[in-house]
Image (cartoon, rainbow, N blue to C red; front, side):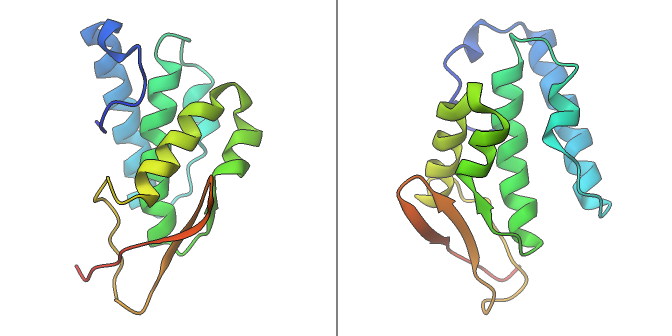
Length: 129
């Protein structure tokens, strides 16, 4: 799982954390299979205690796979979809754009991976894999 942004993470039981991990694995598997999974589909049946952490993890994965697919991702689009989690969304984008999370890879150096952070457009470093 990603670095802690969600403040209540330590209070979640191991079984809830395992459920979050399993849902993230399914979400990532869908991306790898060429699907475009919707975060909402994973959050809808998730109880509130684990929902903020699950959103944080799924959004982190979506930033990686969306970027690899050439998508332009905008934090404010996610805030409109999940207004009750605006702080988490902005924190995930800010960490990604600041380069504190080294999880973005693209096939060639000529491709740029862009994400709209709270303060404006930024580019993530690209590397050959």
